[in-house]
Image (cartoon, rainbow, N blue to C red):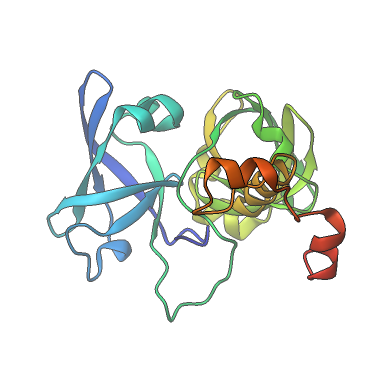
Length: 229
């Protein structure tokens, strides 16, 4: 699990492609402190596994599923990438729950200075994930924990403070660039539970006869009564 607080901006040193499979070699410093084989590092918000490391760089494999659904396939040597190590159990939870499981990508359609901030507007490239976004809710863009200032079914916007802009790859992003998007996982679970509630009971271990004879007790009033609303 990650928090969306980028620790370091690394540089893609090299990329090896074979069809939709890739091996990335990324130069970094801070995030390699104490690194071990098999550790998880978020690269532009994508949870990858360290397969090798050599002082100031590490390697990570990108499988076809990740290749197809993230912006990693567009990376060229020299590109800046946001890096974050998996959260330590004794660490501060400064962002929000980020799994490193990208839901889709979005394209920057506008970038505008507003006083001390920069407002980025995005158009979603994958339909369906806009339903998980709400104004003032959390979102991870290229692995950066941010707050939505606008959201609808096909677009959204965020406002970036100078510190975040200077310490992440967003400083180099321009209109037309693609970013990875991970929606707040809490919304996905709530949707799943409510959909589950609209069908017959599927209690773990229940046989099909029991399932068809019982209805779910998960209702809006039940959730409210137990502190979910």
